[in-house]
Image 1 (cartoon, rainbow, N blue to C red):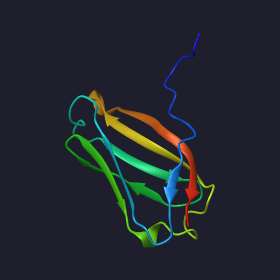
Image 2 (image 1 turned 135 degrees about the horizontal axis):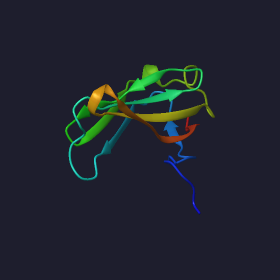
Image 3 (image 1 turned 90 degrees about the vertical axis):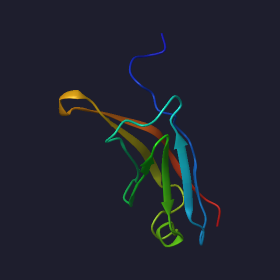
Length: 105
């Protein structure tokens, strides 16, 4: 038996370099993200980066000033969350990816 519930992809490195913007996108596999969907990357003891939903894509753009080693050190744990609205005011809240920051400075 493999287990119950959703298991996010774990151990996915998030690469950051001094002086470089962080750019990332995820594409919906079959269509558009439902209206009201949100996504964020949350760092342990650090910032939270919100994604922008545009049709089939969730995009992150964080300027280099927000990706410094002082703000997000090497080895910092992160989790990428996805929140999808459901009927009755409920939401499905998922940890989509998790891992650690790998600095390539």
